[in-house]
Length: 236
Length: 236
DNA sequence: GCGTGACCGGATTCGAAATCTGGTCACGCA
DNA sequence: TGCGTGACCAGATTTCGAATCCGGTCACGC
Image 1 (cartoon, rainbow over the protein chains, first blue to last red):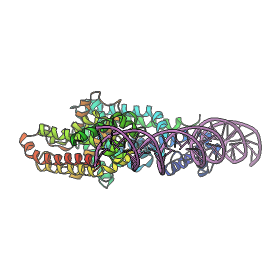
Image 2: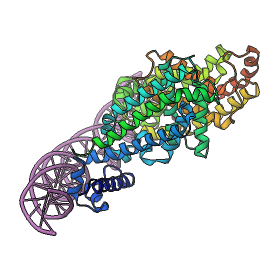
Image 3: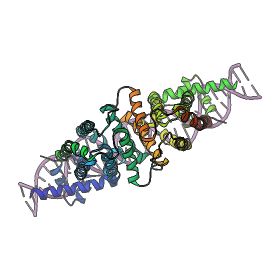
Image 4: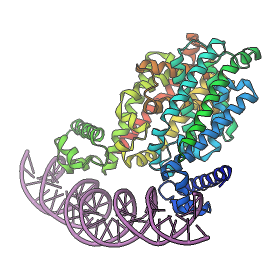
């Protein structure tokens, strides 16, 4: 079979698995049903992934990888998106849009079941890398005068993670007090991060241009790493 | 029996229940054991509370009520604590200190079991009142020029709740990335809320003095309400 | 030689019996 | 006489073995 045909079949299986995972939740999903929906035999699923967990993990990692790709594309399209406030604004919008990302970030154990724990462990490296990326990003932006220096870098990272985490969770926790439109919620997050960390509401384009290449490189690396992580689930 | 002697016995039962709840979790706590630790017969417990749930709910409500009392005392002791950044700073410190509050805010179902759901329902009124209090507080502070008006009040409430929620959750979620000292974490929260909402880092004492009475009244009402809620669990 | 589904055994679920515990109340002690 | 108590009951929960299910394999066939 052609390699590209094989890849297409793999994607079809991933799509079926994703659909079922969201509709039924981890516990009720069976490899039989996934195979049936993808129009392949059960054994074929195991030609692509060694275990069911590897397959479902791939579903989650693919969602994360797609998100990273979108973020990178956005930075490339408009360099102002290197600012944490802008980037997290988009992250919240992506998160609200994609049910897989929602399930992962909200630890939705109805959907993910024990995949929660498995995924947390498997993604530990990727998360650590994301954190390092954020750290380098903040350091670079500080050096270019785009992020303030009234707090230490570590405190700013702690702030970023807590703030973002709060807005992400708020989606599930206080839906009644959140603004109706997703963009409005994202704008409040953007405002919060900007006032907490950044120097200007609309910074000098020359500063942005100077800082952009280094940060694009960071996110490019992260995007490659996450794509690699999806592939790593496949059989050799 | 003297009313005060009866009250003291009730407190002893509450103490025993609290101790057991934290040590064993809701599921393992029995009324027998609570009674034994409080040196009373099991029937006596039911002279104070109609059900086991009412008793354990009282444990949680007492913790909340104590917290409200502390907050009110702090505002009275230093009127600058009417600012959301200061108040939330203290809230985080209280939260980190008190295992009962931690369990409630983190939805720790190992400790609270199904009390989680019961408590959420019973405390709905109190929570709604807290939200209203925050709303009035922000409105008052805006009128006195202590809180900015670049966001709407509802957006500022959403921001406050999301930010606070994020820092509270971060305690449990990313302990490895949080600053070691509790005060440092609280300071980052304070910084975030201040820059997101407030006008001055160290506002004119006259503005504070002018806004304080109205806000003290708000928190006094909240404190009374929460004390009342604890009593409401008792048998008539 | 790639794809398949019947098949195997460990994991999960089910259900009935056994145990536990919230809540009551008749008793007894002050 | 009345407050405090613990034996008691019924319903909830746990237990544990039987029954079912499903992840993963592999011999077959296209």
